Amino acid sequence: MSENILRYDSKKKDVVILIDRNLCKGCDICIKVCKPECLALVDAPDKWEGAVVDVVNADDCTFCKLCELQCPDFGIRILRKDEVGKIQFGDTKKTAAEQ
Ligand code: SF4
Ligand code: SF4
Image (cartoon, rainbow, N blue to C red; front, side, top):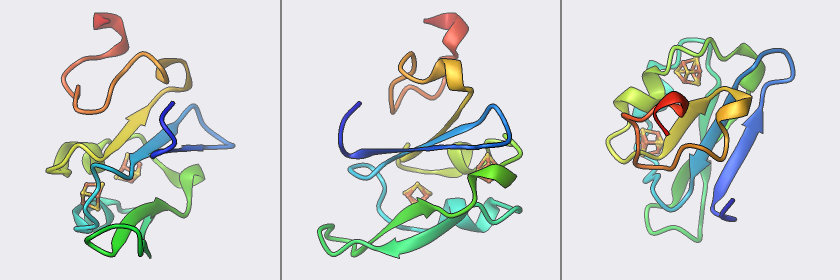
C-alpha cells in the first residue's frame, strides 16, 4: 500500500477506513456527513491545501459510507477488512465481488 494511503482499523467491527492523502484536499465534506464523528481535519503543512482528513474514532464507524459517497475527490474509502488490497482508490463503483 502506498505510503500516502493511511489505514485505520476498527478494533470493534469489521471496518477499515482508508484515506489517500494525495487525493484528499481537506474540504471537510466527509466530516460534516459523519454522524458518529469518526473524522476530523488535521494540519498538513506538506499539502498545498494545508489540511487533510484524519480518523479520530474508527470504532464508532457505522459503515454507512456517506463519507465515501460524498467525497468529490475519492479521498476516503470504507471497506471490510478482507476487501483491503482488492479495491483501488477512484474505483468507487467496484465491490470486492466484482474484482
Ligand atoms: S476525504 Fe474527500 S470529502 Fe473528506 S476532506 Fe478529503 S477531499 Fe474532502
Ligand atoms: S462510513 Fe459513515 S460512520 Fe463511517 S466514517 Fe464514513 S460517514 Fe462516518
